[in-house]
Image (cartoon, rainbow, N blue to C red):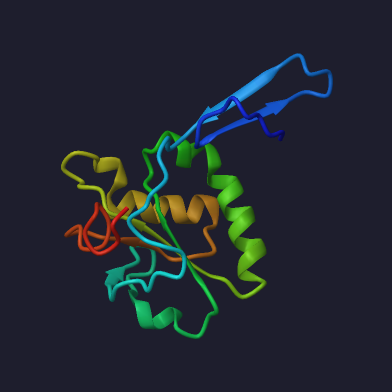
Length: 147
């Protein structure tokens, strides 16, 4: 991957060794300014559909840092990156990072993001982190975590 000063925030460019092809991925075009690095996560209690276990923020207290990912099954970016997310989280979890993923989507508008499908995704991709369902949109969607 190379740096390309003509790209906007959230865009990456990779080039082949012959510099003929160019691949561009566009994600978020604006940086989130709602929280700063080191922001203390709000209290939460959410269920992991695969195990039925309830997870709280306190379950991650013994770790030096917590990565919170807001993902969902239908997101094209997440679909494209699932295997890499697993590789990345496995690598950093071995170094002591705590990781949790949360889906806050409504199953009325996105039924494929519901708990049964989340459990299937967790099994299929062997997620090493809890993938929690926020049924009442307590955490995501700009509430407790202003994303």
